[in-house]
Amino acid sequence: MSNIKVGDKVRFLNSTGGGVVRSFKGKDQVLVEDEDGFEVPALIRECVVVGDSEMQVHSSRRSPLPSMTQDPAPQPKKPAPQPEMEKVTETVEGERLNIYLAYLPIEPAKVMQGSGYETYFINDSNYYLFFNYMNRQNNSWISRYNGIVEPNTQIFLEEFSKEELNDLERICVQLIAFKKDKPYSLKNAISVELHLDTVKFYKQHCFMENDFFDEDAMVYPIVRQDIPEKELLISAAELQEAMQQKVREDRRAPQTIVKKKATDSAILEVDLHITELLDNTNGLSNADMLNYQLEKFHEVLSKYAANKGQKIVFIHGKGDGVLRKAIEKELKTKYKQHYYQDASFREYGFGATMVTIK
Image (cartoon, rainbow, N blue to C red; front, side, top):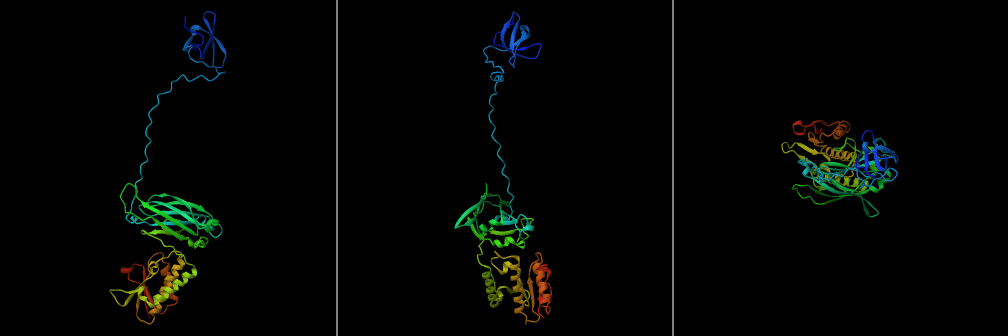
C-alpha cells in the first residue's frame, strides 16, 4: 500500500495530470483536486507522491502555487567594461589654438524670407576645450551652451530663428584648453566678446565658402594662432572714415605698402593681400575687402603715373581669382595706356601681375 496521505501532491502514472489528495474513497482510491479545483477519483497505485503534506498547497481558486524551483545562488557581478579612450590624432598645426563660431542657414534659398539658422563650435586644435557660449541681455549674460569639445572637432550648438537674432548681437565665448593623460603647453584661459552684424544674416552673399562645411557659412574667429580675437565695434560710417584716413596716411608714407625688390631696384612690389593691408578684418564682407584692395591698387598707379617705364608687381595671390580679375578689368578700362602681363612664374606662380607705366 502506498504511503499517500491527505494533502500530498501527486501526479498520475498512466495519464496526464495530478493535484492534491483531498480524501480517500474506499481502500484503493483517492480524490485528487486538480489545478482547476475539480476533485478527480484516481487509483492509489496510479499515483506518485511529488510533495508531502507539510508543503503549503494552493488551488487555482486561492493564490497561485509557489514555484517548486529553488532560486539559483547569486552570481558575483562582473565589473562593467570600461570604455576605451579614443586616441586623439594630433597635427603639428594643432598645437596652436584656432577656434571659430559658424552660422549656417537651414534653408539657404530662403535667407531673405524666413530661414532659421544653426550654430556650430569649431575646435581646430589638438586640445580639449571646456567652453561656455553666451549672449548678453539687459546688462547680463545668458549661457546658451557649455560643455567639453574634443580636439579637431566641430559640434552643433543650437538652432535659432530670425526672431532671436536681436538676442545675438552681443555674444561671448570663454574657454580653457587642456589635454588628457599627456603633457602639454599651458594655454591661458580665454574670454572673447564679439558683436554680430545681424543684418548680414538676411543677405545670402554673406554666407561664404569655407574650410569647415560643404555649405556656405558665416564664420567668426574666436582664437587664431593662440591669439584671441579683438572685436570690431564701429559703425559703417566710422569704418569708411577709418579706411579713408588710412589712405591719406599711406599717401604720406607709401613705403609702408610699396617696397623695392632687392634684386632689381627698377621693379616695385605691392602686396595686396588683405592681411597685409589691414590688421583686423572682423565685420568686413568680401566686397568691403575687395574695394579696399582696389583702392590700394589705384593709389599706387596714381602715385607712379608720371614714372614712364616703371615696373610694378601687384601680388594678389591665386585664390579664386576674384581680385586678379578685378585688377585686369581696371587695367583694360581705366589704364589702357599701361602694359601688363603675368609676373615671373618662378617667383610668384600665378599670384601676381606686373604693370609697366607708359
